[in-house]
Image (tube, rainbow, N blue to C red; front, side):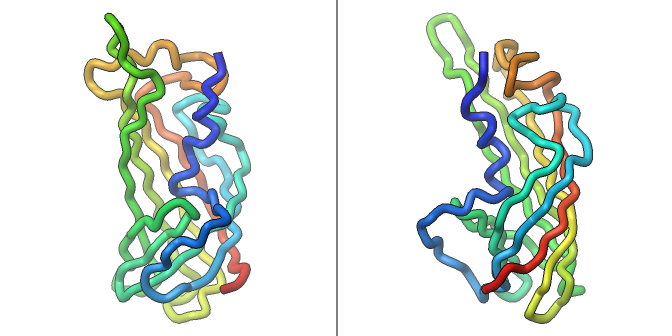
Length: 173
């Protein structure tokens, strides 16, 4: 059994820049090419389509101490610390890979995404940033996620976490 939606599962904080133009809150800092190296995974090798090396584009914008991570699907708001370079983002969602049915509880998973890092400069132009991305997965109470275990694109363990070390270079405005 291959779980077709899982290769897209890491796309929320990562890049999935689409052709449509999203509204950019604040002032644009630019578009960045991100190279993310797998740091650790308790979800298992290749879980959710994860790779050892992952590259994507992301836009950043700033409005005061609010920093926005624009992945092409949504603007994820984060905080810029008083030093003007340290940042953090958090996002939460619930995914339901197996819907409940007659006599079956289904499987719903709470997903937490977070990113932390440091910009290369507190003042534009920001040439790049470094940091980490973390994705956590926890089945909701009453869920039966056994069908997702030890299958291609699934999990080797739940709850679990996947983390990446990232480095980004500015590509332009």
